Length: 308
Image 1: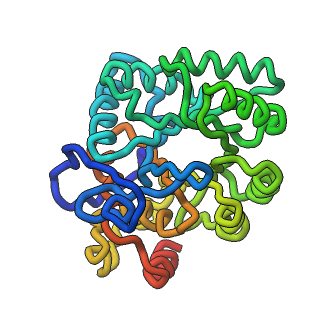
Image 2: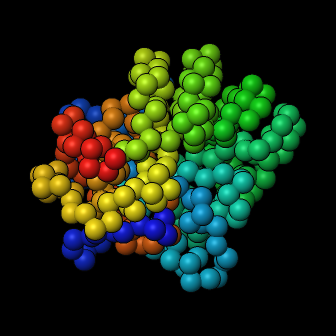
Image 3: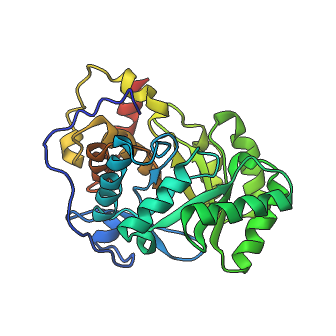
């Protein structure tokens, strides 16, 4: 994110409280009138906002530092703007510790949809030990989504996640990866196990998930979290010095970050995007991608040609 060029027009940040309602063709589902767009978790019918946030890197800061204090405002703006989904992992340094403490201090845990992971462990005992540590670090007794990270020991860890779901400590289970080269393996696991969620990389320049992962998710009714929406900052370097397309204003886009997030959300299989940031103004900017119309097929094609 350090390479990001915001290209933000206007100085005002998103603020205030945004209300949600059920999916029935209303403003909540459509992202109209200043209300964040939402989508359905197919396995339950629950709705979640399409703009989430990640914590890798951005939350790996020293408590008490200026960066840590900035995260307070990042979280305030996120929830004030209608966000709920926060993706983290026990292997993201001290991100879980910082997230748990800040949510507790700000009184926001009950509004958060925490997605964490069984990450880098092998065997049931190690997975359970890690999960119990995660609960302590997050200062909670349950999480909304537990994902098997990068398919590591996935048979054992997914079975554990499902056992924890039966115990009421986990609401949903999922599997993740972040590389184009792993997408066929991820699709095989998803087809075999049918989790509630999958998480995979997706951006203007990394579109491999369109081939098999997304069609499978739609067919089987699996929610999708899309990561690496900015291709680890590479997209901003590609558009450095370039103006937004002339039609950007028609869909309410005022920055390249919004453009890239709306591109991902214009794929109907994507339930939510999870961009990470430790900057309050960037958080406000990201949230605006969940408002207004999405991109048409022709706009998506033009953006691909422009960035590629």
